[in-house]
Image 1 (tube, rainbow, N blue to C red):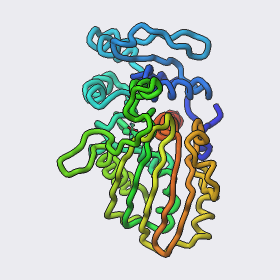
Image 2 (cartoon, rainbow, N blue to C red):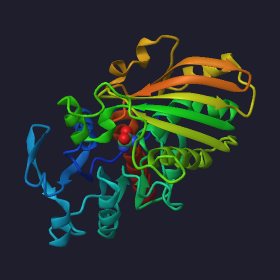
Image 3 (tube, rainbow, N blue to C red):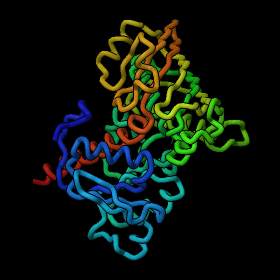
Image 4 (cartoon, rainbow, N blue to C red):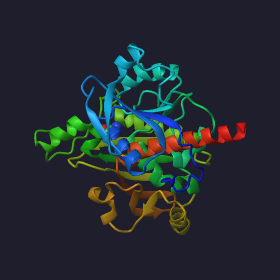
Amino acid sequence: MTNVFSTINQSIPDNLSVGIVGVSGLVGKTLLSLLEKYEFPVSRLSLFGSSYSENKTVKYLGRKLRIQNLLKALDSSLLSSSNAPDCVFMCANSETSKELTPRLNALGTMVIDNSSYYRLQPDIPLIIPEINGFLLQNEFNIIANPNCVTAIYLTAIYPIIKLFGAKKLVLTSLQSVSGAGQKALDNFLSGESQLVNNNYPQIDEMCDDGYTLEEKKIVGESLKILKSARIDCKLSEIYATCVRTPVTNCHSVSIYLETAREVDPIRLHKGFEEYPYAVCTSEISPLLNRNCVNDFRVFLGRVRVDGKRVICYVSGDNLLRGAALNALGIFWNYAARKNDTRASRK
Ligand code: 2RA
């Protein structure tokens, strides 16, 4: 099968069974459409949801697939080790993931978790395939997918950090409404949301120290991912401010970066030429939300370099690059490893 992740050179087996939990949500739907569009070689696809979507049907490659209630299927042993998928994409909230991921693991299913529940747990890899996908050479029961802002902005500025290190990062995110889920999006489109004509400078719960949970997630995840990457980084300070903006798709991030080493603009631009995941542009148009939708790449522009300082602006599709595509990149690494293991057994 053609590899949609052009720089992962390994092929993957075509006999893996796969499940999506939360297939009625925006990330679940995006994942399903990617599996379908690129005809991912899955031997069986199982769709799971809550009681709300139970028994609804979804079209996939010309067939109608029925959504099962995962909790019921587990409680009634309808789902057992004999028919549980090899790998499940968990596109549900933290509570659901906390409850159901260990139960799926117990059936032998590997879970790629899109919630925040496992991301900062020390033994669980938190992966952006383009940065630390090499960690997946080992076997894991759970692999965490980062927050959409983390995935988008780190993918974009990774060539800069790899070349020149990072000491301090100050981020302001401008996050679209689809990041808050289907209900929030419907509410916004119906004109009833307080987001109409407003930026809203709080995403997720406010904590006692004045930071929001979203901001803490981005800080903790960025440090974990960069620490696990094989680079000379030295990042010690990172501050985030997260703002919900009245647009439907794509997140943007305004970035102030202090590097460890002097930035050479020519090497910086060359670094991006050799990096297919981000486009470094001097134009405004590629940075606009509507122009990033459905693009696998992230876009970085308004780049200002001054000694050991870089100021820039990043945009990317939050459902795709920030969630579903990252999860599929993880799946590809996992599946390629299975292929290797089989080949070495022969
Ligand atoms: C948001 N980070 O945009 C979230 C999506 N998981 O609210």
